[in-house]
Image (cartoon, rainbow, N blue to C red; front, side):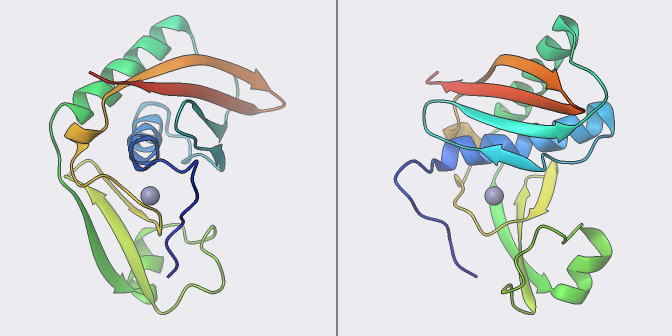
Length: 150
Ligand SMILES: [Zn+2]
């Protein structure tokens, strides 16, 4: 599988995206983001949703993502067969060119997700997660976030 590499791409941001996605799934039982734009300074993730988030939900989301980051979880890769992966994960987003072996990225015991991107090796490298804003339009919730160096 090809590993993404472009200058804007940021492993810290992308690893935070994994944690945000898992936290969204746990809090709201929605799917992981179906579309996203990850850059060094700020990023956004889009979710199929039915409303905007409240201020209380946004602070809870910030809190849970940061609690996970602060657990200093190892980020590891595992390789499993496509058949095995198909039983556990939604592989719809996987490119057709993906081979018979699927790379799974695990963030401690918190998240596991098929991914070919670049990640930090420990969540301690991510920094502090902060949601800038959210908005809701045509059944899409957009979450904009950044990372603070702390
Ligand atoms: Zn990834």
